[in-house]
Length: 114
Length: 113
Image (cartoon, rainbow over the protein chains, first blue to last red):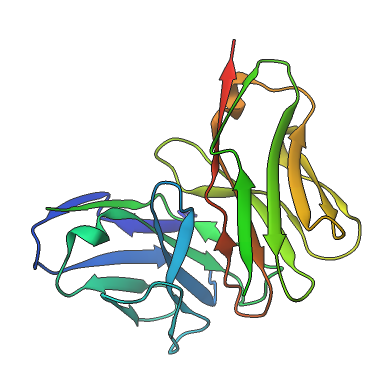
């Protein structure tokens, strides 16, 4: 099992460009999440998908959109990148949307917006 | 709203010394509490979690944490630090179904030889 995979690993964008971060999991998990990690702020939830076909906003959704393409895949799109979106982005999944279920994290995508 | 505070963004200990990483939370309901570890250039890995039951929780790599409701704390300890413990540690809380984790700011642990 590969677990949670993310592509790309690194990306540099110019302000105003768009891009999609891809995430896939092979653990047959129902719930998936997108976080961003900034120094001193821990991880903050951008969007989550409790189950296939549903998505909900997290703490910092502005400037992002998501698509739960199927049970395996959950993508994050930046329509018009801004320097404030420079961050490390993590995708995670869990068996179900209950707090007792562990979240499994991908290796991250390091995004720089110039 | 739930929140998590980790005291000390950087902690340095000598190899073999006690590791103590502090975490305090605020929550309006009994929380679920987690400690995650992040090694350089990697994702997060669960160390341990408290859901219900015994308040002293044992995790991987010799770490443990104690849930103290009266102090709203969930401090992480390890009796003897190893060089391989050098990493960033995150405390997190979840209150409700939906599994939305709220993370603290993280503590970077450095282990000196």
